[in-house]
Image (spheres, rainbow, N blue to C red):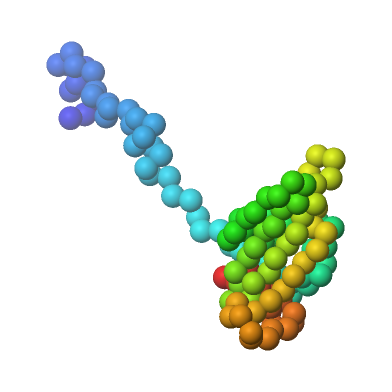
Amino acid sequence: MAEPELEQQGKAPSLPEPLTSTEIASLIKMPPSIHAPPPLERIRIGALLNTDSSTLKSIMGVPDFMLKNGQMKLWQYDVGECIIDFYLRQKKYDYSVTFIDIRAKMLGDTTNEQACESELTQALNS
């Protein structure tokens, strides 16, 4: 109906019901991110010596195994064919890495640090 006809009939035009916040939110689509985090360069395990526990955790993630004995902690990571043990000693308010042990997963097998670094880098980038 045209507006003059509505005025003649004494009726106001009906407006659609307003959308709820949930309905509005369901209509919003986030564009896909064009910024993927850059891949990590090859991780040098030895460079993690003297790293504090929060930094180590942000790089490596949650350990697969943890052990605490007095002022020492062992954080163990299972990476490919390698086991990486980080030994952390308590400082004033945090722990820091004081020793790193890299070994083969299978008892008696040999491994080398470069192979473990490659597997670790690949695992953290996937």
